[in-house]
Length: 272
Length: 87
Image 1 (tube, helix red, strand yellow):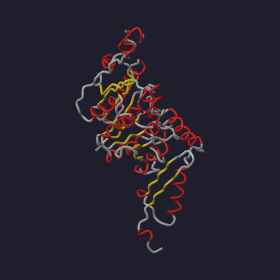
Image 2 (cartoon, helix red, strand yellow):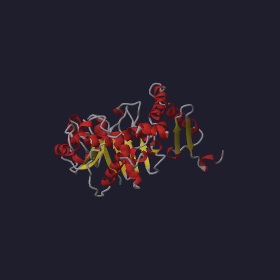
Image 3 (cartoon, chains in turn green, red):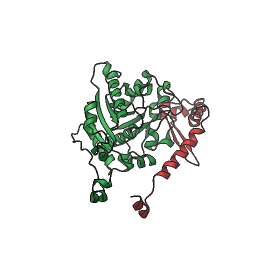
Image 4 (cartoon, chains in turn orange, blue):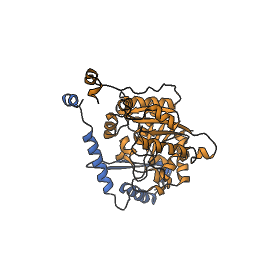
């Protein structure tokens, strides 16, 4: 039986879709069978980030409503064979999803995959609640920024009350993934530190992904960062996060400030 | 870094992003009444075939590739011997 992982945040633009693609690909590369599922009905983007936008025929809504069979809607990744995508519908709205329908699809996916990674839409409305509803564990994507941390706190509260697991008295496993982190700004006190965010949200840290131009490049060409540029710092952070999800014990290293030769030569003034 | 890319002739990713978006948005804007032409085609093609032989929907594979100039819709239907026998 597969594990259902929801990638959520409350706030938009923090990196949920990037994270879903990167973690999904990283898990698949370890040999696990993985499906990434887009729950953002009406504003789908996971297909674009995965580079499969030209191949979408059927989507989650078609399967939920019985217009297509699940295997017909699954799109096999062309780079990693044990990775698949279930796209969201672009032409419908979120009311097209029903809780029993989503539950049936998730149950069927559990039979065929080791990991079902659900990309939640932003917000706390129906799409987001359905994305987390049947999850076994959650990755809360947070930027070290006040509005993101506040929204993450709200989402953590919902994970502990509005999910099937929470309602049946089971524990919902929650992990914090800190993204768009800027070590230099944190060192200068312009950005909340890792410790600050961890203290406020009080859930275990899964990883820290630094702000990186490599992430934009990967989404431009439609390839998860972990496949497109495996040597980049962001890809390594995602890869390690995936291994921690699989139970490996790997210490989280806080990204260090990388100062250029010139700023080192002329001291901090040059950078400020 | 950009200077280095220029010297080494490294391919920039922004033009790739623009091209992918243009193809996809051209397709999405052409959708009439919210219906996907590929989905309509596959439904009607299956209906026509189903008039003549029974089709098991588990044995139908639909593949689509949207290109800039040409899109291809590939419908793969398994026709068991028993369905064809006696015709």
